[in-house]
Length: 153
Image (cartoon, rainbow, N blue to C red):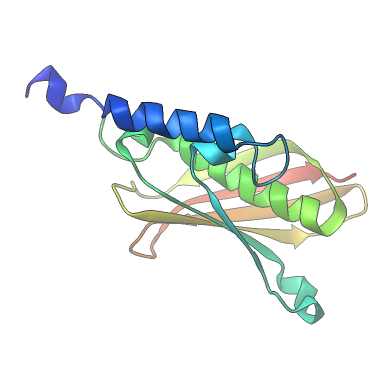
């Protein structure tokens, strides 16, 4: 295989970087990394009466820029998106928190298509909360599970 066949599209990478640089704001949902990964955000449920089922859904497309040398979505990108899904939910529910620790189990590679991360509370506390994020590929199958401890504001 020629070396050029394994390179990402430089123009697409520059365009993504420039778009993130031009459109970011140092705030939740719009910070540079979220814009660079082209993350979409949705908070569920929209009905506040069902607050025990709070969820932050983060979606993005697998692109060549996000692949590891084996051709699948890089585990670090997966970890980042899962952390963001939990952090944005924590912020929405209680204010900005901080990840104390996070463990990830990777169950299958994600090769292409839209990725979805769903961050949820396992147990909400006043100062410490336990959270999880489940990452699925376009096929809807679980590809990674993160559990984390969060310091609440």
